[in-house]
Image (tube, rainbow, N blue to C red; front, side):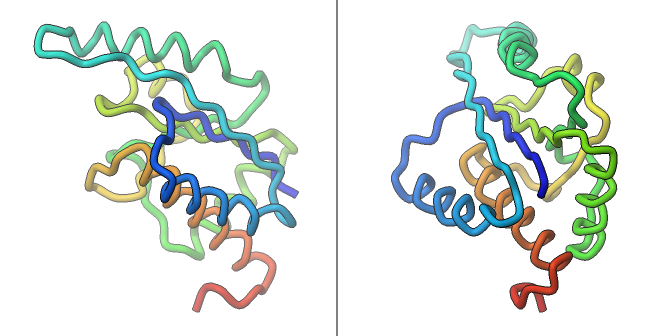
Length: 156
């Protein structure tokens, strides 16, 4: 069983995103001990400094990072995988019994400090998604990966 934590900047407000997250969380129960941590995103306005916002969000993220975990930041310049490669990576990342932590940034992304701290950068797409959408896509991909590993008919 995988031990996975998802840390994301920003809260899920819309019911349809919560419903989608709930569905994949339910599907993952036999395969994954899943924890979700949300940190408050900083307010952005026309006079706000981007680097200051990212630094404040980085501090919030660092406060909730579990020690001894394998850290993966989601970033559009990260490594991309096919579904089968992704399934293999989940095995590889967890082979030493470490928890896996995925970090999802807010509207401005993640601070360089966080990107330099992680063990791996992963891209779900070269396009930018909202953090709500990214969380749903990530959970779906984790589910796809574990079903591939377990021979469950989901991925064709």
